[in-house]
Amino acid sequence: MISELPMFQILGAMARHAAESQKVSATNIAHADEPGYKAAKLESFESYMARATSGSSLDAMSTPFRTVETDSIGSPNGNTVSLEAEMLNSADAMSQHQLALTVYTKSINLLRTAMGK
Image 1 (cartoon, rainbow, N blue to C red):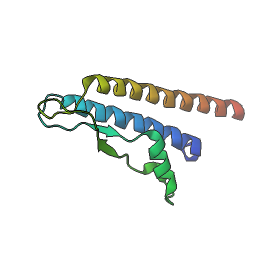
Image 2: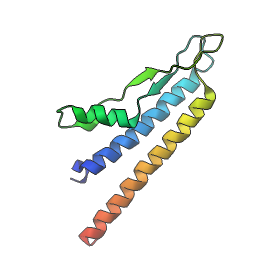
Image 3: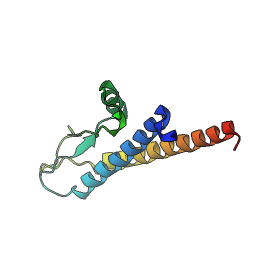
């Protein structure tokens, strides 16, 4: 019931996007020493939402996320992973996930208060 409200669907998508971003960063970091590895990045949440809501699907928030290769300069062995950039991406994903969960929790509390519980 509550999960059908658009705001909660968006917050759920935001939390899933942050988790997927964390996964992409972890994969990039795991392959940081692999010669020729091309680092990937996740599409922004804004572009995901634009793409997910442009279709006529009833469950637009189940649209999968897209990853693309980064356009960063590679090291002499052809690897394009930047550990500094991945650490920043990971920290950003963590804060986005925390934001989504905080707003979700506060919204639930507000609905409970409105219902008198």
